[in-house]
Length: 293
Length: 105
Image (cartoon, rainbow over all chains, first blue to last red; front, side, top):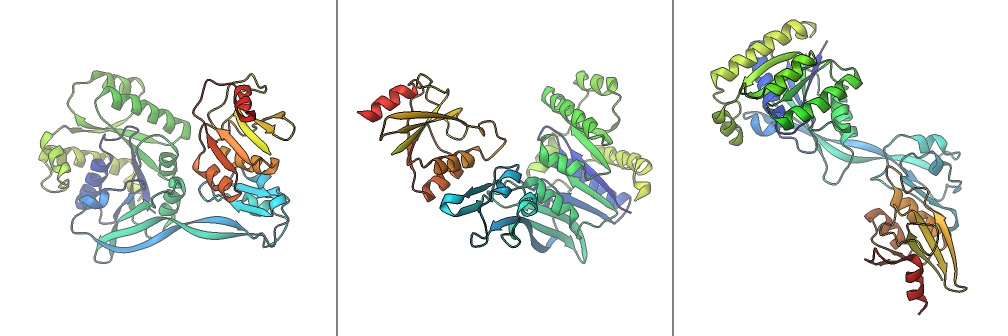
């Protein structure tokens, strides 16, 4: 059985990518070889930039099924228009016109259900994103989703990405998109456990609160990692204590390490203080979750 | 010819609405007899596709020219297909009546 752990944050720039890559790296050296990183930030995936020595193994398209209305079969009854929640269908009986707007369609299938004429509405596959696998030898270490430019179908791309047969390791780390909106929900609801990465700043705390509210509403288990920790922002510690939120670990702030990130050298010569922090987090996660993997 | 003017209310005293898909009302002015008809935009608060639906409504009504502040890309595409003229007017202060008067000159 596999365990899926999402890494999310609310605020951007708190360190989702840093934490995801470090957990991936340290799990591999400390716990098990069967770890995969899944880059669910399909609008701007960047994990691949930091995994040197891993080659792209394969690339395939993620499709969205979009209905096409055959106007030679259509009776222009407008049943599909009535059923469509997304205002994606335009039917003009006087003009013998019937069209589905691709950027409004959510592929819910209601129109095909509503249509009384068989064959009048046929679903066609349209590519919306690219799924890429990276790894060495046979093993796939990173599965990345990358939304096509102009496509607004983030959530569908994430759902299809996570359904892929390429996602198959014992431990799957889902690097979530920033924010608290639909793409984040699509990621964390697929996970067994979510790690919220925060930083000791008012903005970090503000968005952490939003993320905690979201996780509680979704009834998903979660814990917090404080990244860039300097013991200089008491409000965050007070909030976590008052809300009885589990702190999985604190990663000390390091200016040098930030420079390393900027150079893309996140996993080269990781400072000892940071390695120690991640090792402690993994030991904790092992007793908590990974025994089920 | 029928001309639609986006309106914030249901009379010619109402302010011109700069939005097309999200306009509160459409005033359909018929140049052949000078009549006006106000149609509430049921989709003005829609989550999405308001412009598409507004364009569909215009085509159904047989409107040939629309006067609004601007038109979104999806509405534009559809209106172009049906050769409906889009007139952009950057005038948030005029009433619909004033615009109709200008058309009649």
